[in-house]
Length: 365
Ligand SMILES: Nc1ncnc2c1ncn2[C@@H]1O[C@H](COP(=O)(O)OP(=O)(O)O)[C@@H](O)[C@H]1O
Ligand SMILES: [Mg+2]
Picture 1 (tube, rainbow, N blue to C red):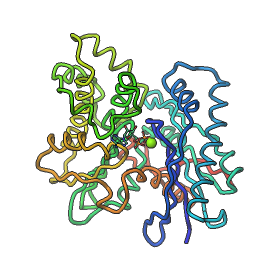
Picture 2 (cartoon, rainbow, N blue to C red; picture 1 turned 90 degrees about the vertical axis):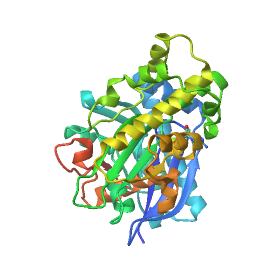
Picture 3 (cartoon, rainbow, N blue to C red; picture 1 turned 45 degrees about the horizontal axis):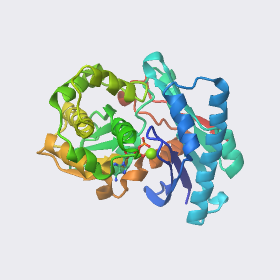
């Protein structure tokens, strides 16, 4: 049985998700492990990603240290699962996004993959997004083909909604000859995380409890929804370059003061409404919604999504056999297997690329 490791560290900078999976004959998750990111590294990622730090040395040093951290995550996963190096075909490493500006035709994920191969002795496939961008695409989302492979149903239309730092969805029509769609809907947790960190010193709003104590401020909500990204038609993708605390502060400055918990409630509603509007824009017949990513563990957010779409059922991908935390990492394991077998990993209708492309670069064992 060919085993693959998928590695994901997203815009939330919460942890490195490492998952061990196989695809033959069907997708199977064998083991998973969440590797902590030391605070000093979190801070350096944040400084580079939000443009407070611009030095080339800082970038190169972080690339090196993330390569080391990703290798450690793989080694810990292997130890945890009792698997030897020889059993693992490849690692698919997403890398840490430092910049994502598809409108200027570039995106940059770092985390030295030579170092991952060297430290683990396993072939590593990485840098998946840039080939799609070079072919005129957004480089994102890259998960729709994997979602189609593992979550498609012949009997119901489905939408898989990944709520990480940013949120993205994949529309899966039951008629598989129909158009497969996928795009970023806007912020997922990133603004809520930043706001509670500033006001309460917590990394995130556990269970959405703080947001639930606040009132949704409709003026603020309308103000935030005036962001042109929400009206843009797909293909589209986004990141911290657009949705960051400065963006929120600019909007807040234009209004009378809003209580901190009301801002949190409004940010939660912003995520819920932008997701719901994106679902409505898909031409699907009463689709069932399946949430994944960390936002799937926020019951208040889920309740708000359900309130926006009362006719639809909202579940998590656990109902389809994959726990919400591991879907994205598993997708990058799958993308590595596609690259190594010479098969395209992107869906051109989702990313806007000129066509299907074999993605990424291979760093041999
Ligand atoms: N129990 C929870 N309650 C509320 N939010 C949660 C919970 N667990 C995770 N999250 C949110 O999910 C985020 C991590 O999601 P993740 O899918 O890992 O995003 P990314 O891909 O950006 O790393 C956290 O920063 C937090 O906002
Ligand atoms: Mg994460």
